[in-house]
Length: 257
Image (cartoon, rainbow, N blue to C red; front, side, top):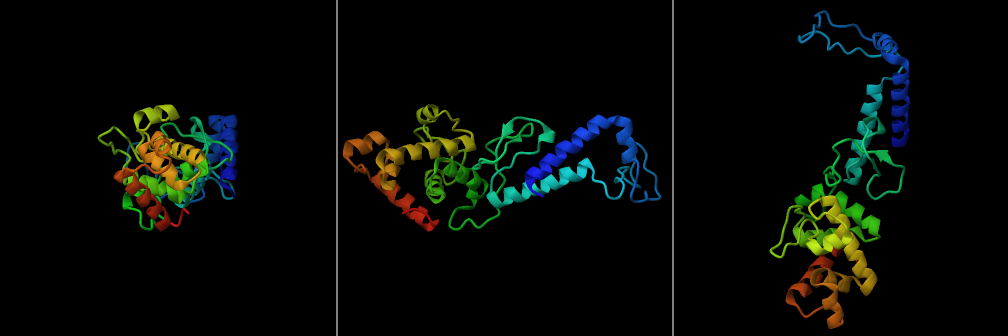
């Protein structure tokens, strides 16, 4: 069954339980499929059965479906490295799996967009700190039509995948957004997901403006005005080294031209 199918089943069972009322639900829950252990369970006591009895054979409980949905969400998160919102049964706002255009599911209360489950995949040459954030980086790259290897290389070079990094000039987060740049992009640079989205959008803008990866990277580092004034990569040692390093790293990651 697909994740959407599981979520739909959750909603059906939840609605059915609500319509039956407490007495009806209690009568179903009281039909055990296994015998309780010999030691009794009392309120606040220990020993014996937990007091939670399985429903009759052939039926499926609300808890069973929740467990199945949680397992499937964990699997998707492990594969993508991105946090997956919980089912509609938990309430909350509407969200989509990062980097997709699939059907919306509800975000559990307390879900933070900037927290992604660590990826268990091979990071290649990336530092271990990247494990927590590559899902956010890849989702942001996909949203802006960027080579994910390029955006990973930018994050690696800018902050070493340190979401709390702040430069002497005030650049913040994974992709080291300056406060004015973040404000112009409408993102919160202290939130890792927002920072990734803002950095991806800003890099996309430079690629659209200059038409070349090296010039876009130079603009990302030194500002588009400097690239425009110099008619190419500015003659700044830091910017020239930055462009070389990012491109080399992107190539190590199997990306860019």
